[in-house]
Amino acid sequence: MGEKVINAALLGLGTVGTGVYKVLKNQEEEMTAKIGCKVKIRKILVRNLEKAAGKVDDPAVLTNSWENIKADPSIDIIIELIGGIEPARTYILDALHAGKHVVTANKDLIAVHGKELMDTARASHVDFLFEAAVAGGIPIIRPLKQCLAGNHMSEVMGIVNGTTNFILTKMSQENMEFKDALALATELGYAEADPTADIDGLDAGRKVAILASVAFNSRVVFDDVYIEGITKISAKDIRYAKEMGCAIKLLGVARNTESGVEAYVCPMLIPNDHPLATVNDSYNAVFVHGDAVEDAMFFGRGAGELPTASAVVGDIFDIVRNMEAGCCGRIGCTCYKQLPVKKMEDTYNRYFLRLHVEDRCGVLAEMTEVFAKYHVSIAQIIQKDSQNQDDHLAEVVVITSKVREGDFKTAVQELSNKSSVKRISKTIRVYRK
Image 1 (cartoon, one colour):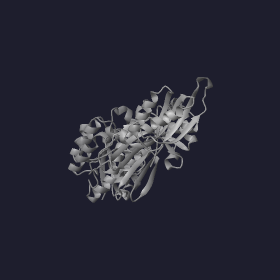
Image 2 (cartoon, helix red, strand yellow):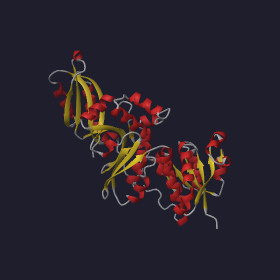
Image 3 (cartoon, rainbow, N blue to C red):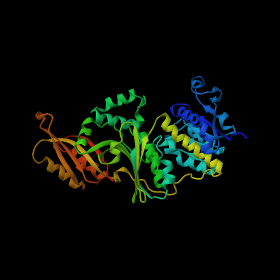
Image 4 (cartoon, rainbow, N blue to C red):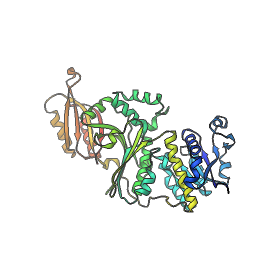
């Protein structure tokens, strides 16, 4: 008897699609021993047949027609790697309705239409898996759904964008300004030609929506996530953070609190003794806290051709095992709760505030009076040496205790209207457990 073969179709032959093609080829000899059968890529959907021909062994597998793939009853698994909302959403829904299993790395789509896709998969009794949609090669979706399912998760947070982490690392280690670090990231291929989704925090925001949904068993969508990027972070901010024993990282944070889910992405000071403070360059790490496991961290390459392909192929193998055992659709949507998502102004954090004020007696007293009015408790005030003695200004750095964001912003707004305050240079949140 010949080996059993499961047929799959690959949608997209870009960076990750090419990686999946390579990983499946590398696994070919051991595949039957691992999962009980072979997985063959029978069709690959591409836009440009001629350009893609050099990437595959047999160009006959290439097609530019989705209808040819959708109508092929021999294809059991669709691997969607074209990205974006459309036509990916249509293709995936078509595949699920046709009884085909789907693997995707499409964070944009899941963060917006995840419920629709999961409900369709459940109705069709097929698998819809998306491990590669968050943190590339780092296993986090399956651990949250399976290995850590015995926990009530209270927090999932971390560094989930390698481009911004590389930029902040260079700013910290080599005292670069943002624009220079971004230029280097682009030159080395860490940043796209249009880096907006990365540096403005949009990419991380989509991943936080997915992580929060899975961790807290309640749907969080992209529009629920408050987002700030790193474009306003300066080398001076990083230098001051170092003086206070902290690093600045773009963190995605999701908390399950008694009053609702908090979900946001922003640059934050994080103490040097926290494991995430030492995650540098393009690496990612996700830190979770559960009532049983307590703290656990997942670390590794968060993007790239082969790391992301590793997660995709892991999902493919999982589907094949389910097919062989007759238990497809075994773990689908886990969002059985309907928790409210809090507005950002109702979240609580500590804050770093850097401002320039008149260098005279009584100014600090005026500042503390405003803070007290809005219940902002000050943990630390540092007056820095003025760079220009002729302007009669002092630079002041304030670290607050935990405070409601709305109250802090109101206090800062009132401060900015005082004649003694000449410039508010920066406000950055400080991570707290």
